[in-house]
Length: 357
Image (cartoon, rainbow, N blue to C red):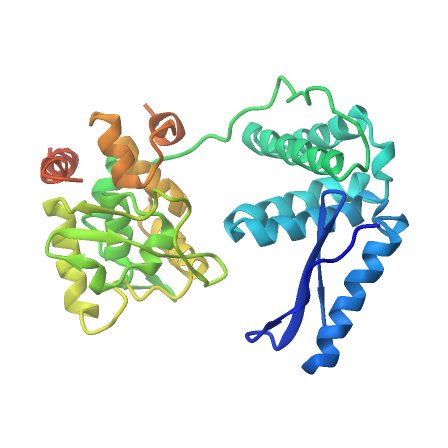
């Protein structure tokens, strides 16, 4: 039996007591159902009971151990990391091995999960992420001494392909920068988001960064990216540590921003976008109304990287918020000091050539 050396702590935000205890590599949290000292004793009792009874039958099945593993991820990583894992497990893993006991898992069980996702047409990247999830889960189980199983290399089916990414072609870029209207109930109307579409193509901002951009983040020609709004409407610090960055706007992007300032300059938010879902819906309507190839919001970002692929890789990474070891061009391209100004001028030259020949 492990012995508890701590006591439950009060969580003011949730009005409850919480205690974290660990045994055999498994970390678990227990909560009170009432406030006051009785609640603290309640949380402590729950923790003591678990420490005394051992891992036991309750966590013997994959679905039960998975809950503990995910709980640990939720406490130690960002939602941007654990939410995709939760989604993949809900769709692909738990329906196949959720009821199976962890000490009965085999290489064939894990391979069957990847094979099923492949048969359903999932991309090679998704299969690689699934395989990584399964290896991480098995490592967790070994550290918790639930088994000694060390899976052999999980094979990615030979026919698996990376999902092809699309970018706006030159003809579509010309349409985007010359047509301000969309369709609403069958009538031509001005598209309120037109400057947001153009700004994303001209800067390579992530959709969430575009939603989170405020006028206070813009000082002269310099844009400071320090927040993003995720698909749940929550404000975050961005996708990774490189997401917080500053860059100088090319002249063509400054012109778009000034046009937007005339519309929303009195607001805190630059583009006053409600949600990423609504933004994407409006973008799809614009594409259909003006005969543009339908691309996703992230593919607008890809379009930026593809357009400026002749620039030095380090400059592009700084602009789009990639780490230095990430293959920016391999990921996105299809075919900040005093140097920031030179980079902005180079970007401007690229887009002026694309838009004006």
